[in-house]
Amino acid sequence: MKPKHEKLTDSELLLHYIEGDEAAFAEIVNRYKNSLYAFLRQFLNRMDLVEDVFQETFLQLFNSRESFDPERPLRPWLFTIAANKAKDALRKAQRTSAVPIGAISDEQDMSFDEMLNTLSSNNSIPYDELERNETAARVNEVIGSMPENLRQILLMAYFQRFSYKQMADALSIPIGTVKSRLHAAIARFAKDWKAFAGSQEVK
Image (tube, rainbow, N blue to C red):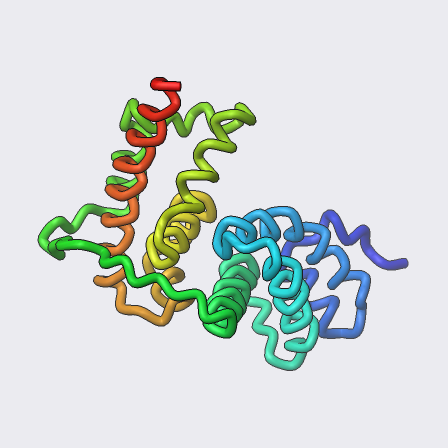
């Protein structure tokens, strides 16, 4: 009798799939499909690309049975595959973002938690209200208008809780660049949110 897959850990599911149990892979898809789709929708900001990248991500995972390492956390690995597929799709679509990051000094070396605390403690950014549909829609609109490089780092850090190393691996950039880009993304979001909120008040 096969175990109830929904009660298995990610590592156990991978082991079962390696052994030929495709129902284990179906459970992985079921477990991560919603969060991955939401991630890609915000990362790409192009609905015409989301579905293809979503399918390609799980297809690569499906075809990677021989290279699975059950000791490796599945979630960051899956989202790294998705981020790389998304970047490839954007390149193929010749969607470029030439907006400079700005002068961000590595001396402003805030820790990961400090950056998130700065973001969430800013009274002009009501992240504690994200469950409210209207606020969530506004946040998504502001994030969607950000330059691609800043949008993707913010989504990985704040919404997916990637570590510095996981972001560096996913984006193929040094950890120092991750830190400065994340700092820039937070500053850009705060600026854009205030502008957006101000424009809404005027209406």
